[in-house]
Amino acid sequence: MGKDELGERGPRCRSMASPSPHHHLLFFLLLAACLCSAAAAATDTLLQGGSLSPGETLVSSPSGVFELGFFAPDPKQPSRRYLGIWYHDMAPQTVVWVANRAAPATSPSPSLSVTDRGELLVLDGPANATLWSSNTTALRGNYSAVIDDTGSLKVRAGGGGDDEVLWDSFAHPGDTMLPGMKIALRTPGKGPKEQMLFTSWASETDPSPGRYALGLDPNGSGQAYIWEDGTAKFWRSGQWNGVNFIGIPWRPLYMNGFKPAVDPQLGGTYYTYTATNTSLQRFVVLPNGIDICYMAKKSSQEWETVWAQPLNECEHYATCGANAKCTAAQDGKAKCTCLKGFQPKILDQWNAGNWSQGCIRGPPLGCQANQSGDGFLQIGNIKWPDFSYWVDTVSDETGCRNACQKNCSYPEKQRLLDWKKRFDIIEGIARGLLYLHRDSRLRVVHRDLKASNILLDADMEPKISDFGMARIFGGDDNQFNTNRVVGTLYAQFNKA
Image 1 (tube, rainbow, N blue to C red):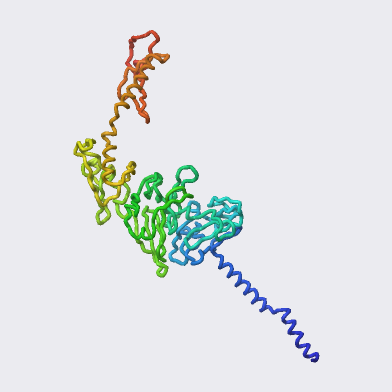
Image 2 (image 1 turned 120 degrees about the vertical axis):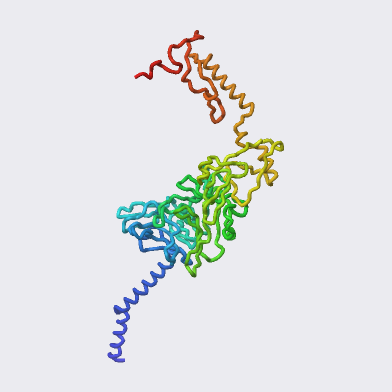
């Protein structure tokens, strides 16, 4: 072992202690690969303190069905960006939920962040103006936003997984209903019922809230409605008969588990459905008010329309008005006919094709059970009326007939008061006159007392009105002559 041998080993040892630039490059590439792998494994989650910018997205786990990020729906206005959820790897882009619908980002640098209070914020511009907030506040800490394969964006406390869910986008829907979502009435605390509405886009390229909204009847009838401009009824599903909505006979909807249930947390009834196969499904309220169901196979990635309402004019709300039947032609146009025993309310409008005023009863009902020609007419293939009054204590047709005849809620009878109520009204008028003539400090003679001057309030209490011709008498007066027209202050007040 000479110097030459030791000399050879020395450089080899130094070479291991001082790696070449190529070794540095390999080390950083391996480190970057590890970091990218870790980031890819967590692309469904945005952690507290982190932010999401345009060009960055979260992809649902484990199957990567949905994607969350910023998008520009209008190619003519690419600077207007929204935070939304769409189907991952499907073309064209199909958006199912939008956060900042009413306030698009206009700067090049909007962002989504999770605050230390568990709040989701969409911020815009150098000043970080708040465009949208989840309005959640908590004190637990370690918050995260997670998107899953159902299309739901959740805010979790405690680090993710099965920890507490503070906020869920499924409880704040847009225009699209996905499998697993609920159409419900919320009853927060003991306050009034709050509707969960699916609201259309303003147009195909404008996600701002449009004119049409789908939700449950706040009066508790169990029907689903589409409202136009907030209050006008545009379409209704019909009542739930225990199997399906009577106005939606489409069987696949109920085979997929569309059914009612009760949620104690919501404080009421809700409807939901579950997809029974691997196809992608979604219900959308379109900008024109049509509620439509799309289905797509993952292999083809092409959307197919499988159901839509309303399809014709007869499915629009109250096309024919009251007491009429609507029949749709092949082209979807409506044809209205009055029910038996009824006639058009406004004949000229009816003949001109404006049926909205409906029909009124022709021959009046006798309203006497078993003593008149009144009867019941069976009508098939129609929705039940959108009635405001119904009897829910009967279980069969005979019981319903008897209840209707006993109640006799016909217009002719509704205008008739029983004797006790009539006597109460007469007595009330007499008490009023007695007060004016005897008990009042100033004696007042009405001089124009007639039926049209007696007003009835909501409790049918009489009120004497119209004192334009009344006269005030002194304490000892019992007769008075006037030199001017009764009911005027000055006889010549009309002269110029």
